[in-house]
Amino acid sequence: MSVMVEHPTTYFSQWISDRPDLLLKMESEAAEKDIPIVGPVVGRLLYLLARISNACQILELGTAIGYSAIFMGEACRQNLGRIITFEIDPGMAQRARVNIREAGMNGVIEVRCEDAHDGLATLAHPVDMVFMDVEKQDYVKLLPGIEKIIRPNGLLVADNTGFKDAHEFNMAIHENPAWTSVNLWSLLPGHSPEHDGICIAVKSH
Image (cartoon, rainbow, N blue to C red; front, side, top):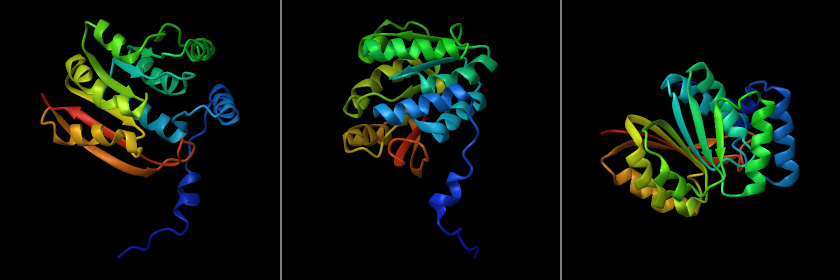
């Protein structure tokens, strides 16, 4: 049997990909102002999932300063698609718009200052991928709306499923035959928190 690496936290932290200066600046701002962001590992995961699934229409629930949207936006730009992202806080939404403009993604990412529940109700066209990162107790409330808007075989990614407030969502998606899901407990360097759960699910039908 193979021997595991020693000090896995340190070992896996060395494989974090390089980021452009804008994302590094956003990471510093998030650390200084205690703004929760997904960090470079989950950011790269979101990029890869969007690219692998060829997602052209992406919906994000919870923009914050636009960090995760920029990662997905790069995939969307390559897929010739676009992102709509909802942020309820006007100050955060404006900061996200500034960062998105600096990233050159105004034509790819649209920030709507709106509650995620209300925003979901306004969408008429199906989406290929949803990333959910709002208040964790709201995840289970948002799930029916996501199920309606996401296309068959569409992808849902939910962050922070290691939080107690995500428990009802974790149960609901695990028991719902409309979804095929995996809930992963992971080391996520640069993520807030660094050890946390991520749920990845495909709409089965």
